[in-house]
Length: 279
Image (cartoon, rainbow, N blue to C red; front, side, top):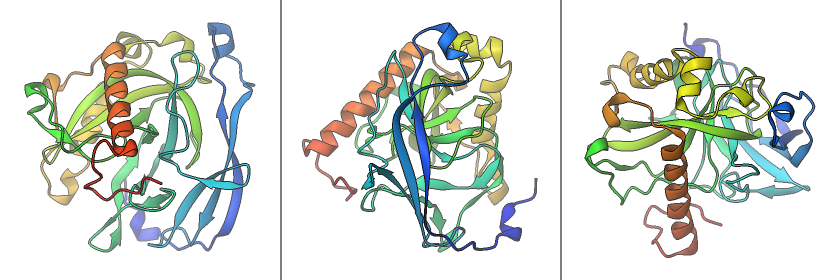
């Protein structure tokens, strides 16, 4: 696919607000399949600056107050779900991310050598983060991940459902599997999840269900993240655990561990040597 950088034009946006809804997870298979789902919590997004510029920021608001994308949305929802914040809608290429070192941690476009970053081709899934998680760069994993330490970011999510998310959208998801990506020596977990309102949500609960209902999708995800830097002349990313996705129980364990790491950072028990924005 052609890189979208060649057609980018800045679009002026002046504090435009739109509602973004976090959907209530359904406790039964029947309710998982309903298209009308009650709202759990309603958020709005506010864009400041022009898109495709270094100044662009997207903030989340609740009841008219700006909140932190990283800190103020709870990690855990009902019935074993977690909240997923979409940074990059599926089939887009602008590399958006939560700015963990800025006040209120808005979503911005990543920058490298003073230029906006784009993936070399579209990402095929909704991509974002788990709030209130953190991969501690001072804590190394075991030999299964080459003793790599955390990448100093919240945990990433690859949401495999059929619907395209909105940037800044907050969605309850079912964690299903996890991949241990190793990027330039840093451990960068990728949680594979599905929105609770997806038509297939009731059919998938663990890694083997993903293989059955979405045949080949986990390998497609691994290959995409393995190779996306190679067009720039960089080596392939590696994966721990012999390239294999781990099951739901393991996934929930990693989510809990990174939530604990976040709480230690936020409370001051772990010194904020990375100078992250914690207010």
